[in-house]
Image (cartoon, rainbow, N blue to C red; front, side, top):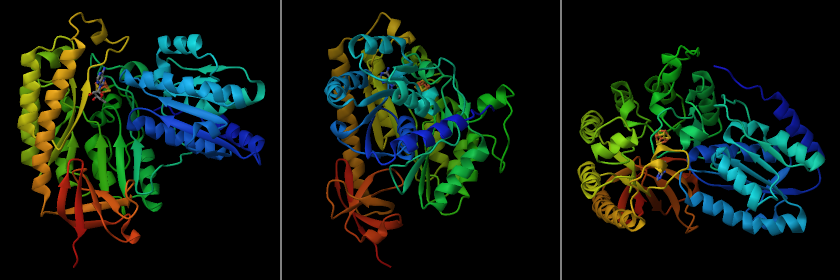
Length: 472
Ligand code: 5AD
Ligand code: SF4
């Protein structure tokens, strides 16, 4: 696999660090969207800290503001434009450098709109040009001329950028970039380019290093994790097998062996690629959480076909049955879109039917949002907004009813909880998660942070459980 040389980026980071030395400069970053974007933001933070900027939350205090944007749904656009309206005055008052990156910048009509309506920005860069960020910034510092750094190419794999992680217990590790599926509602394949996997050795060494630093939970990230290395295998793109890793299943098995890592999670797999070797690896690997996120999108075979998902309602349910049979204590979560073009009442009822049957632990629900450039946007049979909302509410009601029942079932059970830190809403409490990703709060010493402890669940609330440490 071709890897990009980042030498000039690292040199520029050092140059800017010298220029900034002693100036007490601040940066602020706003991340929208998915965990891959959050992972990119951690790299941006790593670069900015090395360049002698210190992080502040308040945009007003920053000398450099970075927006890392998402374009999967429309609301992220509204949020960006709102924020740009706010930072305009900071730019005028104190010359704040404004950089806008992320997936939305791969959309030409958005960059055009920025130039028209928000011409005060300094840098736009896309997810493929992350490593260019220090170089673009240097140009701004040197000659104050606006930089647009967006590549249409699919992007290659970038290794070795500095990274500043948000959390001390949980770390995310991107294992692949891009997507080749072209689901007809989704903009991702157009902005993140074609699927390409990182080398097994780079991933394993990154996880080993994280384990040494004290990280306990690893989240493997990709748009389609269970086709890891598939494109490479099918197209004879050379990669180096390392510790027997040549697929997603073998990757799970190899990471499971890394000492001091307690938990492994992954998002998102695609149901069509959920092969038996992956199901068996989840069953066999003690550290791999038994919560599997299995995006459904729709329960209607007709709608799934138009969405280009390549499975039917029955195939999805059969897969779920097989997984439930093979993996003891399996729990499932999912993504669902309501109101995709042409979705009739019967189609929506099929979605409710699958939700009823699978009984998910968690459902991420989305109202269909038209994305320029996708086939879905061109379809004529768009669903009126009020019907979309009405269906969303009905789905939400069903999901909340199921979750309430499930929460009650947790009471009295003993759950292994990885304690993540202090509760954000109550400093006197600790918080952690079950294997099934449920938030649990508890009273306990700070020394429990980072430990995987058995808790007895004593009460439940809609979005969290309460537990007590089991002694002995
Ligand atoms: N409208 C609504 N939801 C979408 N998603 C992706 N594209 C769209 C869209 N155009 C949802 C899918 C995906 C999740 C990350 O976002 O459910 O799994
Ligand atoms: Fe989008 Fe489908 Fe690829 Fe997921 S698998 S990123 S929904 S095109």
